[in-house]
Amino acid sequence: MQVEVEPFGTIDEGQVDRYTLSNDHGMTVQILTLGGVIQTLSVPDRDGQIDNVTLGFATLDEYVRLNAQVSFGALIGRFANRIGLGTFDLDGETFHLPINMGPNALHGGLRGFAAHLWAGEAFETHESVGVVLRLTSPDGDEGYPGRLDVTVTYTLDNQNALGIRYQAVTDKPTVLNLTNHAYFNLTGEGSGSILDHEITLFASAYAPSDVEGLPEGPLADVSGTPFDFRTPRAIGSRIRENHPQILFGHGYDHNFVVDRATGDTNSLAPTAIVRDPASGRTLQVATTEPGVQFYTANFLKAELVGPGGKVYRQSDAFCLETQHYPDSPNRPDFPSTVLRPGEEFDSTTVFVFGTDQM
Image 1: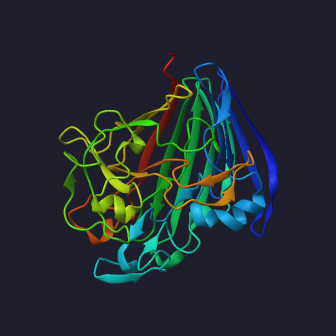
Image 2 (image 1 turned 135 degrees about the horizontal axis):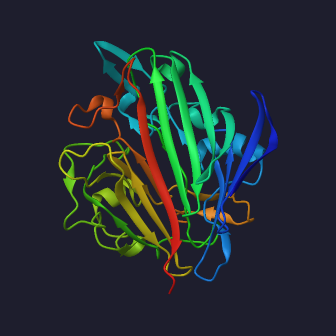
């Protein structure tokens, strides 16, 4: 295993570096200090053919100009997903955030963590290689209170596991919800639709949303709905059903509640398994987070071109964004996203790649 670093270009904040993590089984992950972006993630299929299975861009200029639209592979913060009307109350004070998705605030604001230059530091151990990324978000950044010091650690081992650990501390009470917005296609980026991929979601409930993607009403049982993936189903098997939630989301773009044992709030829990019948590649996801946003790239409009020279279209990828529930600061019935001085936010998600060996 090894980790290498090279310059990737320069932006106003300074030099952008690219870290390449490699293991002994042909898996490589390339990570940019701009936005903590996973630029490429290459893994073997059942025949040993290695392909990049995550969407992205070839050049720094494209990330600077275009990635705000889609957040390919980027770290999302301060608050992943939506906050209704861009406002929330905390300790008797109302905070106002920039509105950037319909009437709501999305993914941390007009210039969230995905657009910032992080400081990177490589490391190697006997069991893994990786990179530690650090960012300080000042008090008032995008309307959020408190100075926030964030550390994100990417780790690759010889079990083809990519781990992402998120840690943060604050000097004032604030709200926080961090995730990575990787888009996966296990056949290979630019290869077309993922609707034949088979997915299992270990989730018995999900959050129905309104037409703007904001959770409304109580959590809902997935039983008898197109949202029941507790046994393996093709992603596209029910994506064209006449269900109001499918219509609102233009496909799947919903928070699923990760099933956990009673009283278990912070262990790594099985979250999803995805299998691509064409390549035999598999992906297993586990997280300490209470939810996962399952998104089928519904808003890719054949306007963006990947590093392989192919145009990206709707349903050419899926996202599994492990996180707290959308609009949690305004929903006391949801798990809290409040972080206070003296506390440490500490969250881990692991993506394990393999093959079905058929």
